[in-house]
Image (cartoon, rainbow, N blue to C red; front, side, top):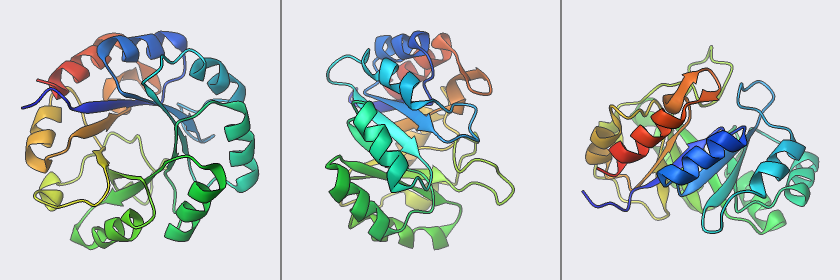
Length: 214
């Protein structure tokens, strides 16, 4: 397997975690703006962290059905490289956000079964990247970061018209198999590198990056 698997560490909340992600070779770092999440950040905290991210690493802001007023505030205060929409935003809303802020937009699409695959094509027409994630259970409080995987065989051999990233239940133990089955060249991890909910572990981050690129 080639060494050019790109990894996103999502849900970074402090400088120590940011440094661990950078040192391990992450190409994307994700900041979460969703009050129900244990990884939620204030705009001010995100601005301070984003200023410390080295050049060449993509700074991604994850929001869930955020309104324009919040996104205005966020993009004015934080030097971002990409917006990740992780709610039930429609393709029209994705296009609207992309046009308003002039930033690349990644849309998360939850997959549980074959019936969910059609949405991928709808969002590929408007998004710059797609995050193919496990669909959250109806009882879940969070739309992502639940540590759940989907059946990766559902997307094996698919062709994509935009760059895409695999997410959902990935850990150092299963990421290389997930990459092999799906052909993913980009992977996203959050709960899979945490020692407790919302608490990232530097050793687990390093192990995950090593496994993804092995």
